[in-house]
Image (cartoon, rainbow, N blue to C red; front, side):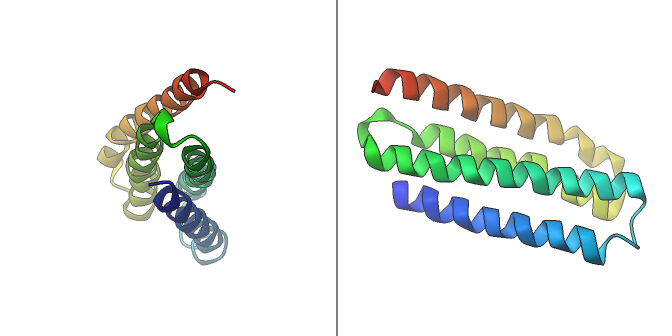
Length: 124
């Protein structure tokens, strides 16, 4: 599981860089400035949580019995819902997609909470 988390985290981080570059170059002249900001927020949060996913994978390799995988999967769900909904909202302008974004935010919070809890439970 730890290899999958590191690999998935690195892949999602690379995709966040690509999304950021796409937003900065291809979308800058095509999107309303507010929607461009929405797109950039999706890329930024994807990067933060992709790096967190790599951290989870490394912790899981160090302490496999500690159950870090749940935190990692919460980050993956968060990226899909939070960043994915922001990308879709920015590209389509469909405001209803914004209703999904808070669910991704909750998944991020769950992931950080699980990481804190498992980190404490795993000890030094």
